[in-house]
Length: 320
Image (cartoon, rainbow, N blue to C red; front, side, top):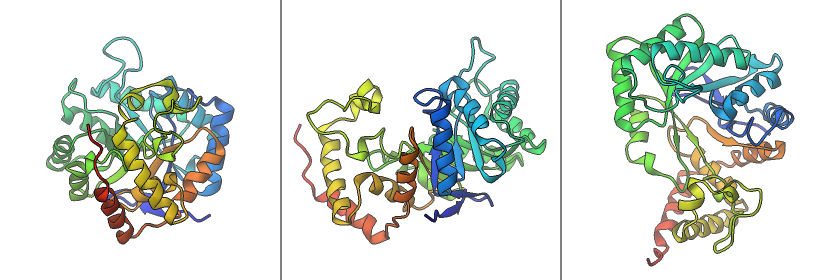
């Protein structure tokens, strides 16, 4: 298997087009399962691992640090801060004090000398954005962080952040991480155009729409036991709709005609979108990692993408 590597935004950092999402580590995956997933990711050529301090109540970072065992130099490690990590106002947010403390804690848990990509997890009004960006700039200059990015920002928030970095001569943002999939295409209206304007790499998360785009869910039937949607959650309540199942049928037919699965289509379609640097998909088993990586060997052409859009448009919209 030969994975493609792409520049992350307007930086020289090369990341695998298949990335590894880790919000299951410490939650659905114990350390042994985490280690197996990471070992397989490295084996197939994945070099981009994305986590956050809040994942698994910090166990995701801890498990990753233990599993890497001196292999950190071969990987690009991305993590995030902002979410509440303890009781009281000082243990979350985007203040200078918290940014510095959060970075030190993540470095310690991950067992690395520097965080390759440090991302603001969510927009937070609790501190001036300039204060946050200056703290991140200081972390870069002292060698604790190499690059910075944002996650879940709207288009205007991205513009505001980039304007501050440019006018105040601070470290620029090289990436944005947003929910993006065949079912969730809202970022195409404003976020993606802004990302392209500022040469920011797009890192889509939930590329399989919480597993819906694997085809394991059937209309009118309860989610299979053990699947992510079996436990409820936001997508289980708003995602299992007639309209989404209509779209799923189009995706499945399109993929089958080309001897692929709908899950492979979901990942390959994202990789074919301009500006996408790495598609991060979560995994709880080693075989899932290999499946995701193999899916991204399928290179959709512009004609393929256009044909899929035309197939969607040709389907009648369900009444009601």
